[in-house]
Length: 255
Image 1: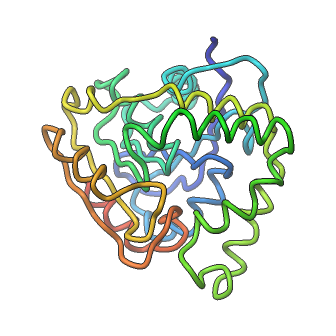
Image 2: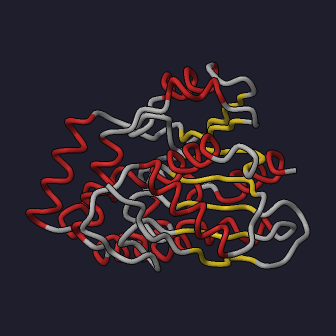
Protein backbone atom coordinates (compact mmCIF):
# COMPACT_ATOMS: atom_id res chain seq x y z
CA UNK A 1 0.00 0.00 0.00
CA UNK A 2 1.17 3.54 -0.69
CA UNK A 3 -0.07 7.13 -0.76
CA UNK A 4 -1.22 7.96 -4.31
CA UNK A 5 -0.44 11.27 -5.95
CA UNK A 6 -3.52 13.49 -5.80
CA UNK A 7 -3.77 16.75 -7.71
CA UNK A 8 -5.92 19.75 -6.94
CA UNK A 9 -7.73 22.02 -9.38
CA UNK A 10 -8.76 25.58 -8.44
CA UNK A 11 -12.45 25.63 -9.35
CA UNK A 12 -13.29 29.15 -8.16
CA UNK A 13 -10.79 31.60 -6.71
CA UNK A 14 -13.16 34.38 -5.64
CA UNK A 15 -14.69 34.95 -2.25
CA UNK A 16 -13.28 35.41 1.23
CA UNK A 17 -15.08 32.62 3.07
CA UNK A 18 -13.59 29.36 4.29
CA UNK A 19 -12.09 27.52 1.29
CA UNK A 20 -14.12 24.54 0.14
CA UNK A 21 -12.23 21.36 -0.73
CA UNK A 22 -14.40 19.16 -2.93
CA UNK A 23 -14.01 15.52 -3.90
CA UNK A 24 -15.58 13.57 -6.79
CA UNK A 25 -17.54 10.37 -7.03
CA UNK A 26 -15.99 7.19 -8.37
CA UNK A 27 -15.69 7.38 -12.15
CA UNK A 28 -16.00 11.17 -12.45
CA UNK A 29 -13.78 14.23 -12.77
CA UNK A 30 -14.18 16.69 -9.92
CA UNK A 31 -14.41 19.69 -12.24
CA UNK A 32 -17.35 18.08 -14.07
CA UNK A 33 -19.33 16.68 -11.15
CA UNK A 34 -19.16 19.93 -9.16
CA UNK A 35 -19.35 22.48 -11.99
CA UNK A 36 -23.14 23.01 -11.73
CA UNK A 37 -22.75 24.00 -8.06
CA UNK A 38 -19.98 26.59 -8.50
CA UNK A 39 -22.08 29.62 -9.53
CA UNK A 40 -23.83 29.44 -6.15
CA UNK A 41 -20.58 29.29 -4.15
CA UNK A 42 -19.11 32.63 -5.22
CA UNK A 43 -18.39 33.72 -1.64
CA UNK A 44 -15.91 30.86 -1.12
CA UNK A 45 -12.64 29.90 -2.80
CA UNK A 46 -13.24 26.38 -4.14
CA UNK A 47 -10.67 23.67 -4.86
CA UNK A 48 -11.31 20.19 -6.17
CA UNK A 49 -9.22 17.04 -6.14
CA UNK A 50 -9.34 14.01 -8.41
CA UNK A 51 -9.11 10.32 -7.54
CA UNK A 52 -6.14 8.30 -8.82
CA UNK A 53 -6.41 7.76 -12.57
CA UNK A 54 -9.31 10.21 -12.79
CA UNK A 55 -9.15 13.74 -14.18
CA UNK A 56 -5.80 15.38 -13.47
CA UNK A 57 -4.53 12.85 -10.90
CA UNK A 58 -2.08 10.34 -12.36
CA UNK A 59 -2.87 6.66 -12.73
CA UNK A 60 -1.30 4.08 -10.47
CA UNK A 61 -0.98 0.30 -10.29
CA UNK A 62 -0.05 0.24 -6.59
CA UNK A 63 -2.85 -0.53 -4.10
CA UNK A 64 -3.91 2.15 -1.64
CA UNK A 65 -6.48 2.65 1.11
CA UNK A 66 -9.11 5.35 1.51
CA UNK A 67 -7.00 6.81 4.31
CA UNK A 68 -4.02 6.94 1.96
CA UNK A 69 -6.11 8.83 -0.60
CA UNK A 70 -6.91 11.26 2.23
CA UNK A 71 -3.18 11.58 2.93
CA UNK A 72 -2.64 12.38 -0.75
CA UNK A 73 -5.38 15.02 -0.61
CA UNK A 74 -3.80 16.54 2.49
CA UNK A 75 -0.40 16.72 0.76
CA UNK A 76 -2.01 18.43 -2.24
CA UNK A 77 -3.75 20.89 0.10
CA UNK A 78 -0.38 21.65 1.68
CA UNK A 79 1.10 22.37 -1.74
CA UNK A 80 -1.79 24.73 -2.47
CA UNK A 81 -1.32 26.56 0.83
CA UNK A 82 -4.69 25.48 2.24
CA UNK A 83 -4.39 25.41 6.01
CA UNK A 84 -8.10 25.20 6.88
CA UNK A 85 -10.91 23.91 4.67
CA UNK A 86 -14.53 22.84 4.70
CA UNK A 87 -14.41 19.37 3.13
CA UNK A 88 -17.15 17.83 1.01
CA UNK A 89 -17.32 14.99 -1.47
CA UNK A 90 -19.68 12.92 -3.58
CA UNK A 91 -19.83 9.14 -2.97
CA UNK A 92 -16.20 7.91 -2.66
CA UNK A 93 -15.15 11.56 -2.43
CA UNK A 94 -17.33 11.84 0.65
CA UNK A 95 -15.72 8.83 2.31
CA UNK A 96 -12.29 10.33 1.63
CA UNK A 97 -13.45 13.70 3.00
CA UNK A 98 -14.55 11.96 6.21
CA UNK A 99 -11.18 10.19 6.43
CA UNK A 100 -9.49 13.56 5.90
CA UNK A 101 -11.46 15.15 8.75
CA UNK A 102 -10.56 12.26 11.04
CA UNK A 103 -6.88 12.38 10.08
CA UNK A 104 -6.49 16.17 10.30
CA UNK A 105 -9.18 17.54 12.64
CA UNK A 106 -7.26 20.79 13.07
CA UNK A 107 -7.40 21.41 9.30
CA UNK A 108 -11.08 20.63 8.56
CA UNK A 109 -13.85 22.93 9.82
CA UNK A 110 -16.74 20.72 8.65
CA UNK A 111 -17.33 17.62 6.57
CA UNK A 112 -20.23 17.05 4.17
CA UNK A 113 -20.97 13.71 2.53
CA UNK A 114 -23.02 14.01 -0.66
CA UNK A 115 -24.77 10.76 -1.60
CA UNK A 116 -22.20 8.97 0.53
CA UNK A 117 -21.81 7.04 3.77
CA UNK A 118 -19.02 6.08 6.16
CA UNK A 119 -19.41 2.61 4.63
CA UNK A 120 -20.81 2.18 1.12
CA UNK A 121 -22.06 -1.14 -0.22
CA UNK A 122 -20.66 -4.59 0.49
CA UNK A 123 -17.12 -5.89 -0.01
CA UNK A 124 -18.46 -8.67 -2.24
CA UNK A 125 -20.18 -6.24 -4.62
CA UNK A 126 -17.07 -4.04 -4.86
CA UNK A 127 -14.81 -7.02 -5.54
CA UNK A 128 -17.16 -8.01 -8.35
CA UNK A 129 -17.02 -4.45 -9.75
CA UNK A 130 -13.22 -4.44 -9.68
CA UNK A 131 -13.11 -7.75 -11.55
CA UNK A 132 -15.51 -6.42 -14.20
CA UNK A 133 -13.37 -3.35 -14.84
CA UNK A 134 -10.16 -5.37 -15.09
CA UNK A 135 -11.83 -7.73 -17.55
CA UNK A 136 -13.85 -5.30 -19.66
CA UNK A 137 -12.72 -1.75 -18.82
CA UNK A 138 -14.64 1.25 -17.56
CA UNK A 139 -16.77 1.52 -20.76
CA UNK A 140 -18.55 -1.62 -19.53
CA UNK A 141 -19.87 0.43 -16.57
CA UNK A 142 -21.62 3.16 -18.54
CA UNK A 143 -25.09 1.61 -18.74
CA UNK A 144 -25.21 0.65 -15.07
CA UNK A 145 -23.76 3.98 -13.97
CA UNK A 146 -26.35 5.90 -15.97
CA UNK A 147 -29.15 4.18 -14.06
CA UNK A 148 -27.44 4.68 -10.68
CA UNK A 149 -26.22 8.24 -11.13
CA UNK A 150 -29.38 9.93 -12.42
CA UNK A 151 -33.07 9.93 -11.53
CA UNK A 152 -35.47 8.65 -14.23
CA UNK A 153 -35.81 11.17 -17.05
CA UNK A 154 -32.77 13.28 -16.11
CA UNK A 155 -30.58 12.01 -18.97
CA UNK A 156 -33.28 12.88 -21.49
CA UNK A 157 -34.02 16.34 -20.07
CA UNK A 158 -30.41 17.31 -19.27
CA UNK A 159 -28.14 15.66 -21.88
CA UNK A 160 -25.54 18.45 -21.71
CA UNK A 161 -24.96 17.59 -18.05
CA UNK A 162 -25.30 13.81 -18.11
CA UNK A 163 -23.55 12.83 -21.35
CA UNK A 164 -20.11 14.37 -20.56
CA UNK A 165 -20.07 12.60 -17.17
CA UNK A 166 -20.67 9.23 -18.83
CA UNK A 167 -18.01 10.00 -21.45
CA UNK A 168 -15.53 10.87 -18.67
CA UNK A 169 -16.17 7.48 -17.07
CA UNK A 170 -14.89 5.75 -20.22
CA UNK A 171 -11.64 7.72 -19.96
CA UNK A 172 -10.81 6.67 -16.37
CA UNK A 173 -7.77 4.42 -16.03
CA UNK A 174 -9.05 0.85 -15.56
CA UNK A 175 -6.56 -0.31 -12.94
CA UNK A 176 -6.83 2.89 -10.92
CA UNK A 177 -10.61 2.54 -10.90
CA UNK A 178 -10.34 -1.08 -9.75
CA UNK A 179 -7.97 -0.05 -6.96
CA UNK A 180 -10.39 2.69 -5.84
CA UNK A 181 -13.13 0.06 -5.72
CA UNK A 182 -10.96 -2.25 -3.63
CA UNK A 183 -10.17 0.63 -1.26
CA UNK A 184 -13.92 1.15 -0.80
CA UNK A 185 -14.43 -2.57 -0.17
CA UNK A 186 -11.97 -2.42 2.74
CA UNK A 187 -13.40 0.76 4.33
CA UNK A 188 -15.84 1.04 7.21
CA UNK A 189 -15.62 4.37 9.06
CA UNK A 190 -18.93 4.00 10.91
CA UNK A 191 -17.34 3.47 14.35
CA UNK A 192 -15.27 6.64 13.94
CA UNK A 193 -18.04 9.11 13.11
CA UNK A 194 -18.58 9.68 16.83
CA UNK A 195 -14.97 10.89 17.06
CA UNK A 196 -15.64 13.88 14.79
CA UNK A 197 -15.44 17.21 16.58
CA UNK A 198 -16.73 19.22 13.61
CA UNK A 199 -20.20 19.39 12.03
CA UNK A 200 -21.06 16.24 10.04
CA UNK A 201 -23.62 16.75 7.28
CA UNK A 202 -25.06 14.16 4.94
CA UNK A 203 -26.95 15.04 1.77
CA UNK A 204 -28.95 12.10 0.43
CA UNK A 205 -31.00 11.60 -2.72
CA UNK A 206 -34.45 10.19 -2.13
CA UNK A 207 -34.06 8.01 -5.26
CA UNK A 208 -30.44 7.00 -4.64
CA UNK A 209 -30.26 3.20 -4.73
CA UNK A 210 -26.60 3.27 -3.65
CA UNK A 211 -27.16 5.06 -0.33
CA UNK A 212 -30.05 3.61 1.76
CA UNK A 213 -31.80 6.32 3.78
CA UNK A 214 -31.84 4.11 6.88
CA UNK A 215 -28.05 3.95 6.75
CA UNK A 216 -27.85 7.72 6.23
CA UNK A 217 -30.05 8.33 9.27
CA UNK A 218 -27.94 5.96 11.38
CA UNK A 219 -24.69 7.67 10.33
CA UNK A 220 -25.99 11.12 11.24
CA UNK A 221 -27.42 9.88 14.54
CA UNK A 222 -23.99 8.56 15.54
CA UNK A 223 -22.31 11.97 15.13
CA UNK A 224 -21.87 14.50 17.91
CA UNK A 225 -23.16 17.21 15.58
CA UNK A 226 -24.98 15.70 12.63
CA UNK A 227 -27.56 16.81 10.08
CA UNK A 228 -29.32 14.94 7.26
CA UNK A 229 -30.82 16.59 4.18
CA UNK A 230 -32.87 14.40 1.83
CA UNK A 231 -33.37 15.81 -1.67
CA UNK A 232 -36.54 14.60 -3.44
CA UNK A 233 -36.38 13.32 -7.00
CA UNK A 234 -32.62 12.89 -6.76
CA UNK A 235 -30.40 9.88 -7.41
CA UNK A 236 -26.64 9.47 -6.81
CA UNK A 237 -25.11 12.62 -8.31
CA UNK A 238 -26.97 15.28 -6.32
CA UNK A 239 -24.38 17.95 -7.17
CA UNK A 240 -25.43 17.61 -10.82
CA UNK A 241 -29.17 17.02 -10.39
CA UNK A 242 -29.83 19.54 -7.58
CA UNK A 243 -26.90 21.98 -7.60
CA UNK A 244 -28.72 24.94 -6.03
CA UNK A 245 -29.93 22.84 -3.11
CA UNK A 246 -26.49 21.30 -2.54
CA UNK A 247 -24.83 24.72 -2.71
CA UNK A 248 -27.24 26.18 -0.16
CA UNK A 249 -26.42 23.42 2.30
CA UNK A 250 -22.68 23.81 1.75
CA UNK A 251 -22.90 27.57 2.33
CA UNK A 252 -24.80 27.02 5.56
CA UNK A 253 -22.34 24.41 6.82
CA UNK A 254 -19.17 26.27 5.80
CA UNK A 255 -20.41 29.57 7.19
